[in-house]
Image (cartoon, rainbow, N blue to C red):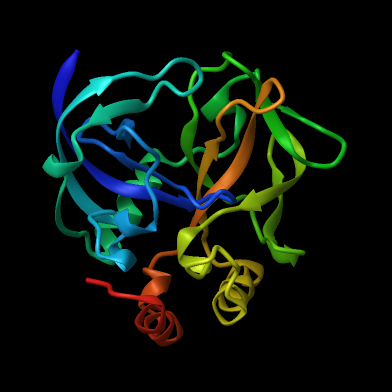
Length: 240
């Protein structure tokens, strides 16, 4: 089925292979993950001069359903038809996230989501009802760096303690390396206990499972408007 879609981007994740995961919320409050023939890269992001930025309303043109469980949100789009329409205000975007936010992960992914002793979480390949969601972070969390990875430790109200990879594109440089001056600002805010909403997603199947990750960290304001972030964007490349 082919339909015309407009989304507000709330998932913008830089993966370890250099590709970028993009997804947003449509007018029916459902997640849509636009896909093209090849994976998106940093050139598709607002920082790289492309159409996709957190909080950006984007016209996808006509899209076609392609996803299979749990990646049911995927749709094929024509890249030349993707047009940015402008970014929502802080309050509008936060209100949208609050409307979609869940209090625990099983309400997003169902009982197929399980947690390992290490704190990672996954869904068996080809199972589950969704791959994307919005989680109200239940209380203070911990953001930290382990080698080249950013990680978040949090306690889910149903699943208990989790240790998840964080792929927020805004916290990495063009080579995918976490930018210390940026993520440490966010660490202080996360630990302070102020309201935090997380965009969470499942990976493509790997070793028979889809792994849970944190795609983006959200506050009541766009944290990438902080002067530290504006400086880093100017250093890393063009922005709108």
